[in-house]
Length: 218
Image 1 (spheres, rainbow, N blue to C red):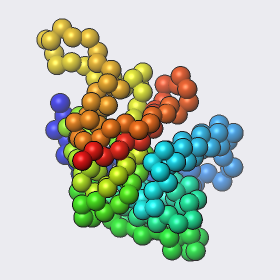
Image 2: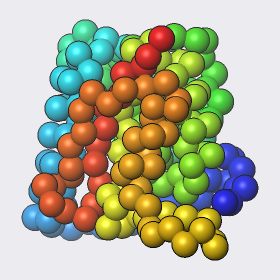
Image 3: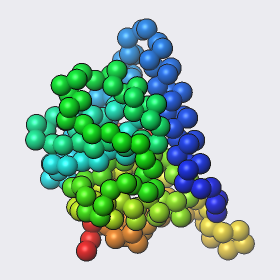
């Protein structure tokens, strides 16, 4: 199993997001139909997940980047949004994507999702839709989940790659078949102290990802 440190995992994810965001921002053409459908589906999944989570009033958006999901998170008029990203430059850049009135409802701070600078039970819901599914090892995912369990008083929303995109092998020499990634991550949720409230595929039958809503136990 990889011993890649959390800082390296976040740095790789941030670099990938920076490249993708720069490409989109630098393209003067309007979004393609496929991209518009992709964004529409993402937003529907987020709305559904927030509804399942009970429309939480205080949400922490982790590894938020340029605030792609802030407009959806802010659709609930009484919701307060905290947003954290390891890159202060990305947080600063996010200001150019959203209006001043909108931004007054969002408090940003630089930090790591593996060591959140908030007290225990500080928020109603942690929203970590994209970073979580890019974390490569069970140990690192459990470290994230345990920090989420500490900081959220109720629910967590994450996305996970489907089996067809991500399968983990048993240790060499065991003679065991490929393990289902879905079984693995759902076992990790339980191990970290969560129950699954809901899971929904990006597209039914697709080879992309699923969005999970988790509830904290104890």
